[in-house]
Length: 86
Image (tube, rainbow, N blue to C red; front, side, top):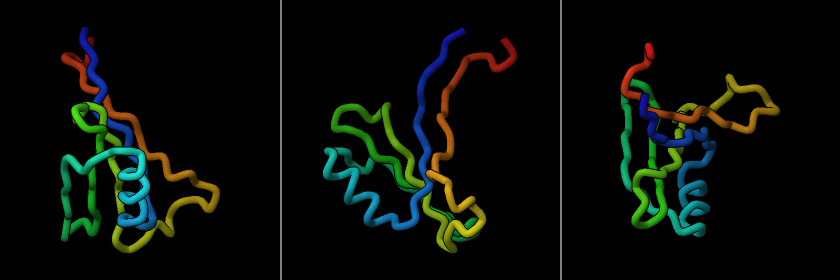
């Protein structure tokens, strides 16, 4: 079985401020998806020349009131495998 790292997802409260922070670290926006229906935005940022190692910033337009107050807003690690049932 082969496994490939895809991304790390983090929920953010202020998308522009979060993007500015990651830009200071040298990351660049590589992909963006805005969902009118779902009312969220996904922004993928990665180091130059390493688009395969992004952080996914997830911003819920209506806020994150449903998250615990002590939440660090970590969402998930994503991996791709060739056979999930192996």
